[in-house]
Length: 103
Image (cartoon, rainbow, N blue to C red; front, side, top):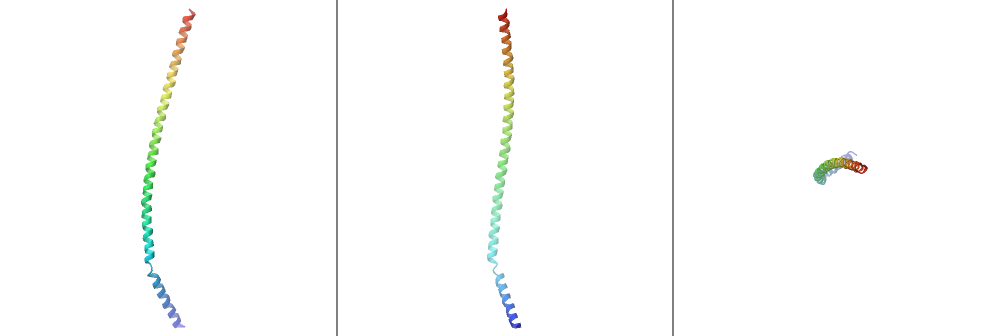
């Protein structure tokens, strides 16, 4: 029985030793995973740069839109003032004609 246990233990040691020497495929997979992570990291940097560029463009567009709105508001104010002036002038002319006709 002791010989059988010793033989079994020896067999297990040989099997474990054989199993431990087969690390090269696992190492190849680990190296492959490392290269994939590196590639994804560089792609992530590219995506981040594109997102930052898009954010800057959006901010620039928002600033341009605010400036355009400001100019449009100023133009509308000038147009309203001009219309008031025109209305006042027309009233003066109408009063003058009524005054001239009534004499």
